[in-house]
Image (cartoon, rainbow over all chains, first blue to last red; front, side, top):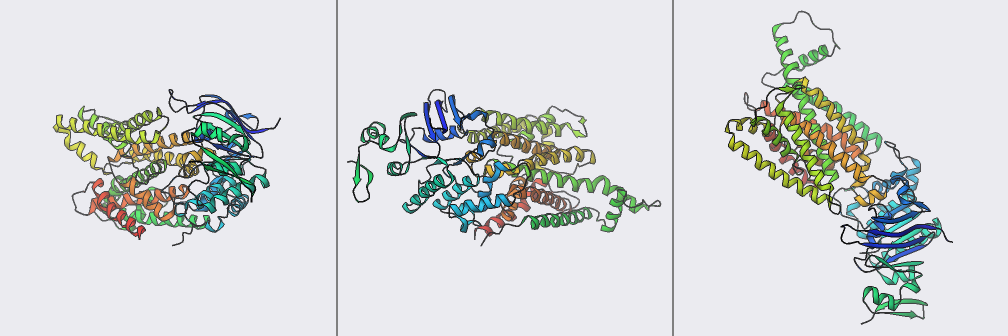
Amino acid sequence: METCAYKTYNLSFGYHKEADILKAVTMGLSEGKITGIIGPNGSGKTTLIKNLSRVLSPDSGSITVLGKALSEYRQKELALITGLVFQEKESDFQFSVFEIVMMGRYPYKKKFETENERDNCRVFEALEKTQTLHLKDRRFNELSGGEKQRVMIARALAQEPKILILDEPIAHLDIHHQVEILNLVRRLVKEKAMSVLVILHDLNFAYGFCDEVVLLKSGEVFKQGVPQQVITKENIKSVYNANIEIILDHRTNRYHIIPAY
Amino acid sequence: MKETTLSRGKFKGVIVGCSILALVILMGCVTQGTVAIPLKVIIRVVGEELGLIPATLDEDSVLSAYRLILVKLRIPRVVMAFIVGAGLGTSGLIFQGIFTNPMAEPYVLGISSGAAFGATLMSVFGVGGSLLGFSMISLGAFVGALGTSLVVFGIARGNRSNQMTVLLLSGIAISFFLSSLISLMMTLNREVIESIFFWTMGSVSTATWDKILPVGTGTVLGIAVFSYYARELNIMLTGEDSAKALGVDVRRVRLILLHTASFITALAVSVSGIIGFVGLIVPHSVRLVIGPDHRRLIPLTIITGGLFLSITDMIARTVVPPMEIPLGVMTALVGTPYFLYLLIRKKR
């Protein structure tokens, strides 16, 4: 059997007692692969990854990371394994890009220990990988949306994680940066043997880019598997209540998903 | 304009330079007062008191009068102003960091009103006496400040999804509630209005070494705790969720820092009354100059906050002798124009 980077079993969570956002979610994230999470607004995608990263703690069910229960990890220990990129929030505080990415080294640092040469190397490497090196002295809050997104990914890379979890990394980006960030993720999986879990809104990208897809419907896993089996006309109809067509482009030999109306 | 971050070595130099400058300025503050005392005398008296210079045996009456003023009145007052200013500045720095809001201050959390409420209660019920050199009014203020913060944090902790909003709103609500109670008590007990009123204007004129020792120790301890979590607070500024993902125990750090800030504020208000604005403008001004890194903000906020209040108090007690202008009034008068200048200059 394949080892799992992340695995959940009957995971349930609710902000209030009456309404569960996640209902008995059982899913897995295969090692060395890109797994996409798709589903309509409010289906629990972000809540799921917040549970996986212990930002929220589940009401019931279990989560295991690399075979060990999530609750057995110390917070810093978990940060050595899993890097997260949330959708960026506006902040009035003006750290430089370099300072932001250096924060990714936090889990490696003892109290009052200052940054050393190794930390510097990792930070420069992460900046280079995400093509943000030229921005290093700029203030973070003065960057464009795409630049901010890449910087946040750079910070997660500076963590040197085995698993990378991304919350809609290409939302609000133009098409050039969308492709660029997805290619970067693809490269990381290949070069660093990372496992990636990524929330995507765009079914086309999910279809063409992910090795596996988890389709969520109001807090439950509707289906998990390879994109071809999950993103089908029937499944999308019953989860999104939308009609789609899946068309094969003969020139590129790729499938395209378009809304039917 | 390109932002250049100071190197670590240069920053150390800046801190040493600022500390020396601060000492010189504090000396200057001591020379000024109803009686101007020459710097030479100050150096001699301080040296003798610290045992650095052998004491003069045959002292004339002028010198012994100077000595009395310096040791019993002027130096404790300048030192206390420095401690209170440093304390209010750092607690403001913590609140602003935790709420990721440069405008946060003890008022928003109801801590200042809590202190005023405690002090009022003591005056109205005429609880006299003192404990550890503190008047009962000071102790009432201290308990009031800490109690209010505990209630406000307690209310917020029960709420899972929007803790921060509940925290701020309950702070404001309790602040209004306590202010109304204070007004009510003042209306019903007209004879204590004056003492309460003066207390709410702020002053360090009652400073003694007996008070400086506990307040100074407490403030230093509080700042030490803050320094211990400075790196964590930096990361929390970039988003609480990602801070957790980076391995920061956000809930714990936030709780410890909130209580630390309340504690420092309570110490300051218990000896000085309510001195507004220091907690707001000092950290903000320092941040505009040095950037958002708390490991650098802490030492500079201590120096700037302390100096700001020492200088303001010096002006307050010398500008219209023999009257003294309330310190709270002075901080607003001196602070506002400077603060607005910084904001306007920054916009450009």
